[in-house]
Image 1 (spheres, one colour):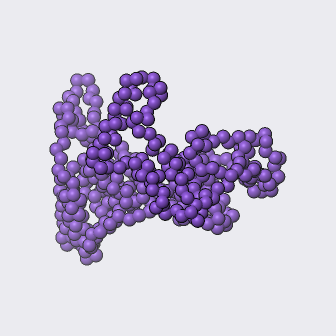
Image 2 (cartoon, one colour):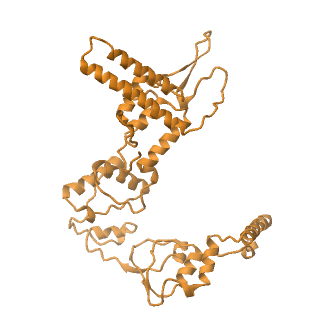
Image 3 (spheres, one colour):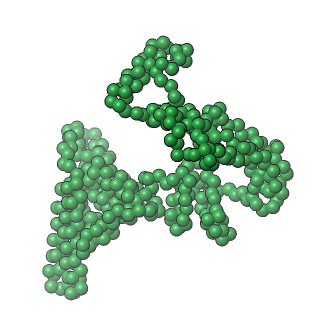
Length: 379
């Protein structure tokens, strides 16, 4: 997008003549390939547009404006400078001590800078890079500062102040110092039910459909551990559409009761055992009628859940798991744990049951990070 061809590469720009020759040959081959196959890359499209300004959708009587903060590529800059019509010059704040980068000064839109008057304490923030040039404070209440014990506490305090002051949300703008602040603010706003719009957009990995898809891929890659499937069901990112139940939460509890471990075959065997256990309890003559009905319903749900999981597994191809060192049954990804024997004792390797729970209530070795529910649904 610099507007250069292979013949335009200056040899004096390279410290190595061999590198110059190699890059020039590579660009010549690339350009020849485009011509041979009648293809156009992005740079070719802009060059072609510069030669056909007579069919430009911008007319001579139009007024147009460009974003002042965008650093365009050289070819993009040439096209913008060639557009007909009247360009409206944006107005920006002349921040003392702020020197734009050389590339930005060359390729960004020209801006009419307006001097800072600082008639309030809030406007004195423009002098952050040159505090000595700032006028004296006015103590007019337009600026408040506070300390927080971390990013989360800082974002929570911002939201608290907005709520306490009763500010209309469409009149509130939060300027974030870094992208991770914007992401954290968005998560907190979702947790508290506060509608927000992020200027840079919300990362797709924050949405429920993508979170569910990534968790599904991780579950398959990790050897189909039951603990991973339970977490998918408990996350709130998926909705289990099984006629007659179970719901996602009920399915997670049935999996926990089944003692399923890992692997494609574990689910059918474990859930059949759960269904048989419930039917045995329903056949107990000493049970109440409501209890027998409940047990039969749970048995049917376990069978439907087994069929549903079987449908998920059918979407994934079978793959052969290559055996590792002799005697090794698993690793950290699928719950395996190596045991170091005492001197003189025979070597042993055991696999921890993923259904075991730590003192915190989560499966051992699988600490769960608490996150707010996110947008989107997955059927």
